[in-house]
Image (cartoon, rainbow, N blue to C red; front, side):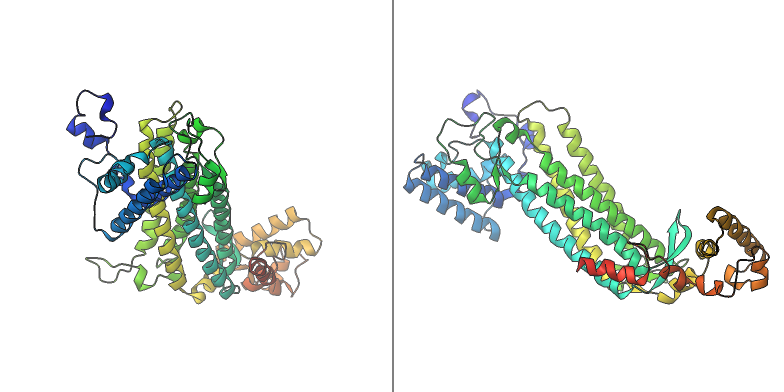
Length: 452
């Protein structure tokens, strides 16, 4: 019999009961549910709402259930509706009448809101640990490759020479913003809803500040109706996860390109690659491709919860049961992707020679050649036009700017002198970018030093 069956004349349809049950997925919250129940039990005893004898019996029973669930010794009774009813049913079965008193002064509405907040707090902290590990890896690689010259791109076309370290630091900054987003969202998750009841509070003299302290929440929710119906914190986690996955996907897209024969910049370690069932020569960057693909999955989780919540009147509605599947999926997908990605880039091999070779192609020294003329007194727009004509000439001849004799350069501008060749090597082009945040070696070391 359902714990809420008193109001009804007949049992719920068997199919509808199974279809509406959430235990298949919200059982993940058993630790949080028992943690919240233990704190609630202690608070009831402290306030004299529950006897000390009953409180001790309840807490002891809950801890036994937790241990047995952790070890797989027990499972929930058949037909259990959700994790909250499951734990309460097991408890009452074991300790009898006292178990029925645990739900005094609370509702499943504030109970589930508390469980989810506890889960999101924990998974956010885990996500932050993984982001730190990724950023530490990127910083170490950036320092290692501060002088490794490679092409910088815009529109996926050769633009200007940069270093691989500089390129990696760009992603370091992206994941830094992700870190800030998760910390910011955490502050709004760290609010206790327990004690709000179904939607209007409770008539019992409870101590919600005590509950917050017991459960590690920084503050107590200010409005009971908002507390039980709010899922903004959950949406924020999935939203931040979506942005982080987008950053991972962008990086993976580059790694996939870089590991192709056409680029040949990097090679993924065998531990993070797969082969072909028909082509024996293949080595595929499948882990990077999967992360790129799983990004769409997390986007779907975000769209799912936003769509669930968009039309709900206050306060709690059964629709909100659908909040857990996208949350659990987004959290698992993000944390596993971060783990695999960090290990993948830490073990990849960099082909420095191929990167340097590519950095010498595609007229990436054209901007610096123009800047050379500007230093000689030529207005930039005029210098831009001169170098543009030189590039066109070089394309026709199949050579680079650096390959042209000085006299040929001087036919375009008398300002060219022998020192021009020192200005337009890939190394010189890279190290000329001395502005704050630039790609010169000193600026890269400065950026790394600022993060240590």
